[in-house]
Length: 530
Image 1 (cartoon, one colour):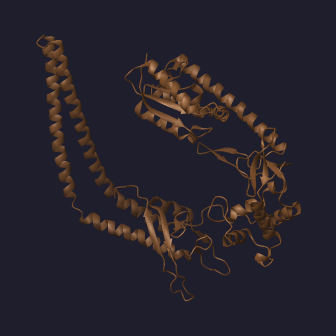
Image 2 (image 1 turned 120 degrees about the vertical axis):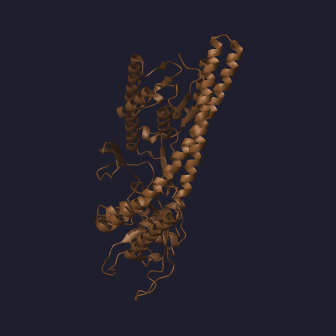
Image 3 (image 1 turned 135 degrees about the vertical axis):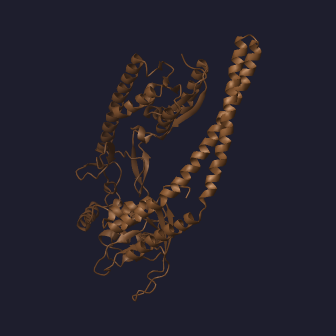
């Protein structure tokens, strides 16, 4: 039996089949399911406290934020039940996800309520039935996924475009009288693609007939006011991807970025490395680049490839320094023949921000942190902790009054029961007095909980202030003792969220003006109330 006064949630999620049905005009899935479950709740006489609407598609529950929130709420609030249109909507992920969901419902003593059946995870037969249903759901998911992947590969072999977004220079076009899509050249964008390949392989009058690198091409396109599709300026990676795209010679690749799953520290992770041995098929769409030009570009890209010189963090400031003008992350340029000192630079084309020596920026940041710590020590020394002690004493006095009131109310309620047993009170009077006293007891309990919470908060506040100084000192001390850039970077990120760097004037060879920059430091403190 369901507790009609209990807490109930509703979970809604679209499946792949639902999206296909919507595309054929069957209506919005979540609305239909919500109406059906609301009817079920009305039939059962229960009230829905919260509705979780999952609008993203994810193989694992970690990729579904509403499911993660539902699991957290079940653990904390222990609702009576969760309404779902069918058991399979909860999880089609791996056995780990399914086990987590079933354990959460079991230990939360929460039922799974569907139009067909109500599952009690603490009932042995219901638990087995639910686990079997989730297992079959997982198998069905694998079959569907395999069918989709095989269909996708078959479409590529037929020369059809299977991507949702067409590459620059093309637009996606529905094939007439058959399933699938192909690509149709866009005249204006196609000219830009041809221009890029010519700049890279032979050069053009715009480059004085000198071949340019990918970064130079991106800067030239920006200078010529040629806009990319979705951003404000051209990125080097976009130009490089364009030069490697077989679609421009009327061919399609499949299996270029196969997903690889690994386990790190017990957590599954996914990566999609480039597969050099991917299959290439002839496409239905027309090419816009000559094959000889394309393969000439591939030869040059391969010759220009430089493997990374380091595989770990080499900069203590990595991921912390941002340009105040363009808000882009700044990068460290290692020392070279022309620049014997490390520098920090903004990589945004035409950004007015001027770079600086790396060691100067690091020194300035450390000076700020040391000065902040010194100022904080002065504040703590001058702070009168007696004020906080007086506040706690006053609140403890108020709490004692509430506790005394609770004792009196409990005694009065005992007397009401005694009078009822002695037939001094009638049933109506007994109920009336019970309701009055119970209401007063509840109100008094809430006031006690509030004042107790305030006392704990003040004590934690004092403790945090006392703990903060040695915590911060430990970070700065460890920073100066280690030479490992990665360890230094980890230490800085304990207290620094990000830093905005500003410098608009260049220094000279004599060293004058090299330190004319400012840092706007945003701290990431472990205690937010400091």
